[in-house]
Length: 164
Image (cartoon, rainbow, N blue to C red; front, side, top):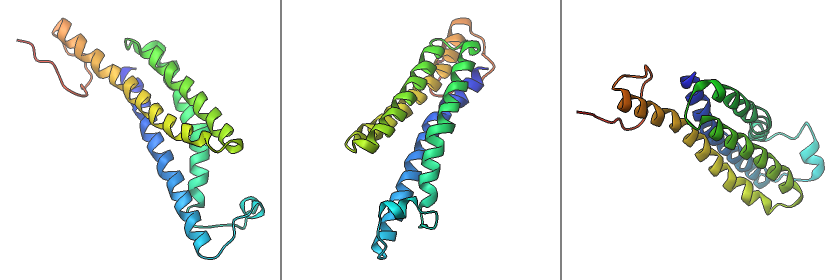
């Protein structure tokens, strides 16, 4: 279960990177579409016939941000209760709470675009939280190996401690 916890936690920063790439793809595609002489209006945004290179970026960003990342965080929290990672449930809860904040910032930014700055910065914080939660497994494994002199049966991530 510790490996499952680690993989789910590492999935968070990976999915945040996909989010960043998707939204960049969408906006660069939209920019090129406008430069080609198209007009961006509310009607064009709501029209199903409006298509430009990068349209899929908006869909990926929305689906991952509203469905996939929260689902991974919920599963991470559930797994944390049986994974026996020191502080694992706490860090999984931090990840989930930050995702709730991230979604709230996204919806707030539609009415107050300046909040989008916080949405972008918080994405970096979310990636760090996921990385830190995952790193707890490696640290816990290293400490278990050091204190007992036995292997935990899981590959260590990061530096290992040599005992003599």
